[in-house]
Length: 416
Image (cartoon, rainbow, N blue to C red; front, side, top):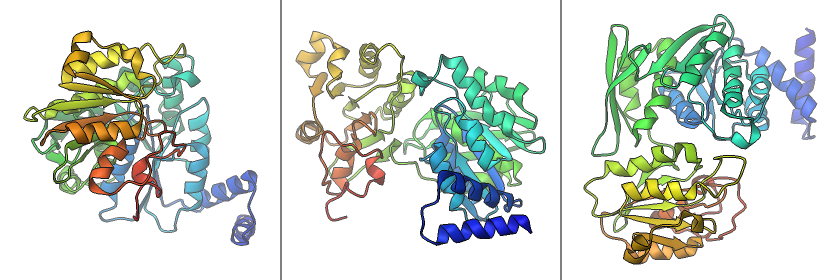
């Protein structure tokens, strides 16, 4: 009775139109969570692949059951907001959880209280907030230790730092990856001519062939994590494979964009930490038939605390090995220092602003050319160049302060 009275008071406060304090909001969320005992909560963390994992598992689970998704906005305030908006009678709730600073995952888990947890990879994303990669791994492992004994934990067996988290789990652990020891193992990985991830997934005596709309072999990690979790929730691998065929990539995360009389764009424009830069750049190698392959390289971030300029030269070297032309975008690009021969031949070019980039690509494009746009959504907003071929872009501000991707921004289009 006391719990119902507190629930009534907090619901009345929220409906009154008055802005609740953060303390009142957190009390409301905790009470709401206590009333959702039949809902299975899935928590996902890692230095990369969280959003794809969350979206893919939501896609797999929502075919037959009511499933809600909280992705993209994955920090503590956003999670509290997402918990508040949960509807009744949900069978599954999937939450992407950021470990962007110490204590973030424990704080989020206190309210989500996930019964299932997935960890993707440990890398240097947000390294400036931590004292080394080991500290990042410890933060990610907090999700594992928050899963109750009757829950399930899913760990990437191909990442030693993630696999080491087994010792922190009170719940049963399932591993996934390409290694032979994985509980959920992928074999025969290829990217098809249509730019789709194809592989065979094995678990015990069960196996199924998957064909998923994702460009890049590195997406096997989030996809397998989602498959393992959904399979443990009672869905057969063959059913998951059939459902997986209709999944579409998150825009801005190695997403393909093509229009008549336009280049084929690969947009990996959400973030660009140096440590995982090669994974994105490699996607352009899946188009050997292209008459020209161009990489546009914007802001590269999060390599170390000592400065952000030293990694532009190795970034250029990576790009130059894979592309016929590299275009550097922004005021930091001069630190790449390309070879004189590449500059003279036009294999390396510089642009300082988004309009200059748009015009250069329009003036020099070759029919069938594949162009990879790689940068940070919060700084560069390179995706506008691709969007403009399909829909008329209104915003060409080179100093955009919007903290969102152009694909999700309501100001981007002219007469949307």
